[in-house]
Image (cartoon, rainbow, N blue to C red; front, side):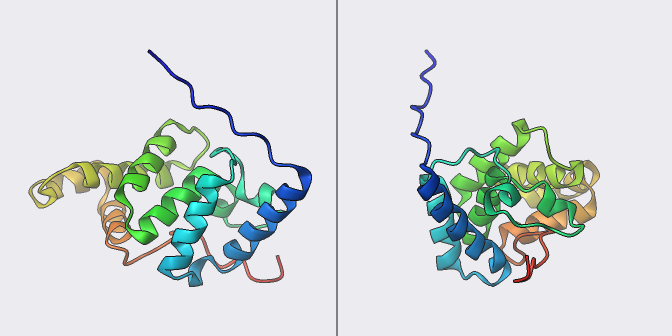
Length: 164
């Protein structure tokens, strides 16, 4: 039997301003956040009650010049990227599942998350390395592997800068 999640109360306008400012501050420093700060931001996003399909730029009132990854970044993808940054495989899989069902994302980014999901769920990936390259492309496979190994973080999200 299906049991829907209980709805969280909507934040008040004052709470929304505080949430927006907290997220904005972290977003402006996203590339410099250490593991503890990434974990704290992820916990905040998981607990504040924003829907995964809310746009980061709309919530924070920031603008991204021409970077399509920022323009299509939603809470759900940011939580996935933060989970990858701290090595939380459970939260990463949840995020990959959300992304799989979310329709508003560039195909190349979606393919990276499908590859990540496959790598996490597959045992002895080295046996299937060639097949994974054929399925996702060499570039996508190596990017997914680097994200899982935490050699790379927040792919495609350039610095926004303080003037945003």
